[in-house]
Image 1 (cartoon, rainbow, N blue to C red):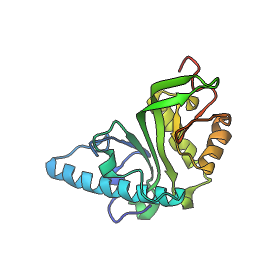
Image 2 (image 1 turned 45 degrees about the vertical axis):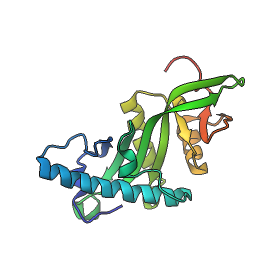
Image 3 (image 1 turned 90 degrees about the vertical axis):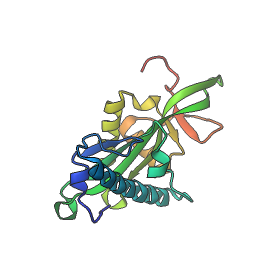
Image 4 (image 1 turned 90 degrees about the horizontal axis):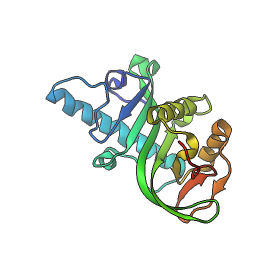
Length: 191
């Protein structure tokens, strides 16, 4: 997704991490620059969140700048630094966070736990099937030091389930009453 401002200046890394303060991890600047940075980042998050919602057939976005505030959520933004006449474009978004969930194990045992979750995952339609989603996902797994099977997924699309099966061998879903999906191995001891 292209923007009229210089994405590369705002998000200099290939994958940029953003939290509730709406400031990229590499930001250095004064108060005026901070306000401008937050304004531009809000625009990126809102536009990418809307695109993700459209792609998933949702009525409203689940990712926005406003929804990121006052949470422990982390958003990873994948940037193509060479696109848009060297201004850069944002091609992927991955949002993680912790949720207090009630889940059923493989034997029907009931658990209440604080689980690390995938809350939104989107790669721009024109950039899919190029391995970019896997690059973004791998980066998140490394940053959060977690194995794919240990993540609860909020309302994954069929496309996302196919991605998890293709790259991580996750296919055996443990049925839940809520809209989260966990796979066999989620409740096994170890990380």
